[in-house]
Image (cartoon, rainbow over all chains, first blue to last red; front, side, top):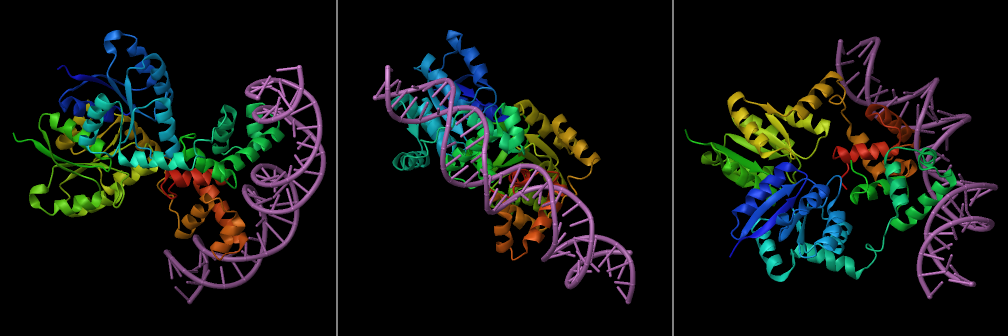
Length: 213
Length: 213
DNA sequence: TTAAAATAAGGGGTTTTCCCCCTTTTTTAA
DNA sequence: TTAAAAAAGGGGGAAAACCCCTTATTTTAA
């Protein structure tokens, strides 16, 4: 039986190469290539011999992140199974990733045996989840609200500016909107995200990866 | 020539094992053992056969972090060379780590060859730094101020409350101080940390681990 | 095609934040 | 022990943030 092929998408090169050497040490699995972000991956996949069985995908990457990339993969290469790899235990991130089509979600602090198991199970049954992730999933599906929060592009833009020590007046200018409209954005977001002031917005943004430190 | 021994201290187990398999693939280097935090490391080091030549140390770990652990190592096992391994490009963190006695500081997005080079150079010359880290070092030593910032307990308390979506009035009550004193805290901190408003304080706090998300 | 959302904006108000500059008391260091 | 520095507090004011409520205009969906 020829080994299953794996591609690693991860911006931290050391981690990327380290995982590669780990995967290569597993029986039945071989790393085809590694790349640093989604864009690089999509370019490489255009060559038919580069199509792997499984992609180990980091969630937080520059240029084209894991969520967006996974969505594209799902549409263009539905046979490839994507396993998300992340340090984030953030509920919404996990849900986004799984909704995008990831077959598994591994936190980066798992044992190497778990990684191997995840690869094997995903090949066999099409999916694999650790208990932690399953629990997070169940919790957030039951009290269905976290997934309901869907921020619009303009709102995200507003939040990012808020995180940049800008006043609302400055934000209004940058976004070519009246200060009063910005007032409205703030008010809706306070309610939507259940925060009391700008600080809460900033915390939310950082927690959910909207604003990178 | 017998290989140099390496110990990996890293809380993300997958990364830990992955780096281990990488280090083992290098000529002249062998992983003695890995552990998840400073406490675990210190316990293991009590066995004389467990003393390595080099420790690859993550900076952000639970229980006993890289900086504290490195300080202890420097005092109790001065012959062991510590190389810091981190995703953080944060100036103050790097400086703290080097002050604690780290012989090198590697960002986690380096090539595996760089890791090998770092190990070799550290054995040979006692230290190794990538250009990025050297630059950060030079910059922050020249405009000597980042290292001068020393926050008092009360100031830290104030910052934490600020991060908790509290108004200054509420903070004053919680800290048993007049709102006017709080006014003073804020003003000194704005100047000290070179920020424009509360948001800047929050960002600083999160970046420097004063406030945990 | 028509009602319901969503988007943009204004009016007008209170509270909070931010920025000076100033005094008293306590702590620290020379 | 005495001068200096730090900590706590105050006055007053301008700007920013926050809150609620209303109105056009555009977009979306039934």
